[in-house]
Amino acid sequence: MAHRPDPSRASREGSPVRSGSPAARHPATVFLLLALGLGWAALTVPLLAGLPMEPFLLVMTYVALLGSALLATRLADGPGGVRRLLGRAFAWRFGAGRWAVVLLGMPVLTLALAAATGSLRTPPAGWAAEAGWYLFNTLVFGALVLNLWEETAWGGFLQSRLTARHGLVVAAALTALPFAAVHLPLYLAEGWSGETARNLALLVLLAPVYRYLLGMHLLDTGGSVLAIGIQHAAWNAAGSLGAVEGEWQVIVAVLLLTLLVALERRLRGRGTRPLGRDAERRAAAARTDPGGPGPPAAGDGA
Image 1 (cartoon, rainbow, N blue to C red):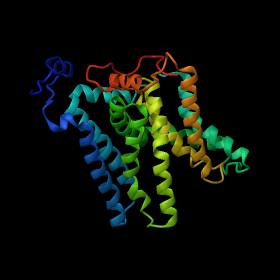
Image 2: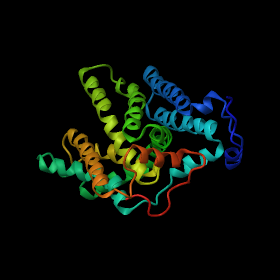
Image 3: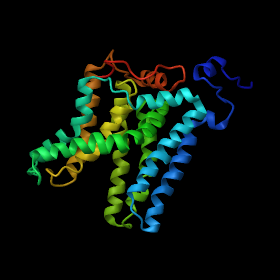
Image 4: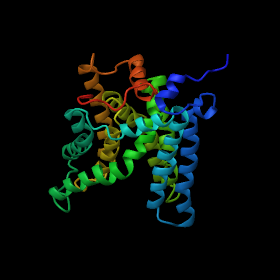
């Protein structure tokens, strides 16, 4: 039987949705083809031409990732879907506890591990400068310039849609694959070596855990992309703290933070959080379906 467009859906969006189009039926596939193709191209050009990488990172973020996510959303859900996705990037009304976790969880755990293992030192510029540097790199340079828009694509678009279909665990694993793959040219920038292989293997192993952490934040904040953009930026900034000698502390910290958030959800979240595959799918679908609600209301999330 031929598929008939839903008039009520079209009216909600303000324009007709071409549900018969392959691109409209498979927005995740459209996104992945564009994001990986354009992303690899953007990061390979400076390697071959000997150009600075920074401008091309912006091209990857805003064109390959964000642009592809917005286009795929427009094809599948119409302009209303684009408005909802962008609205989630500024959904800040989640609880103070969640704010503390996404902003401070990574540096606190990283510093605690360093202190417990004797690898903590006084920052070269002092503790006040270290704190200011961390907040700037997390909230301004990290989240506002890069990670918020990167996560609009990976978390707000792809992982949310995969969670609506498969649940949290499978969606995190599936999102981790292209998330790791798009970074491949960055790892090959200095040439192949044992260290390159180790770092790449570490990314592949950590990516599913990290995407699981972000997936929990998405579910518990009503789909706030702002929450996961800050969490992403906090991980990056915590890995560059001048008070920590070594790199392993931030790796252990993200594993611990994921475990702690998961335990808190199980112990305190029953009845207030989407727990279980069916509840996860319903919660994610409410944020990705054209008829679903918009950004979370005040008080959503922990």
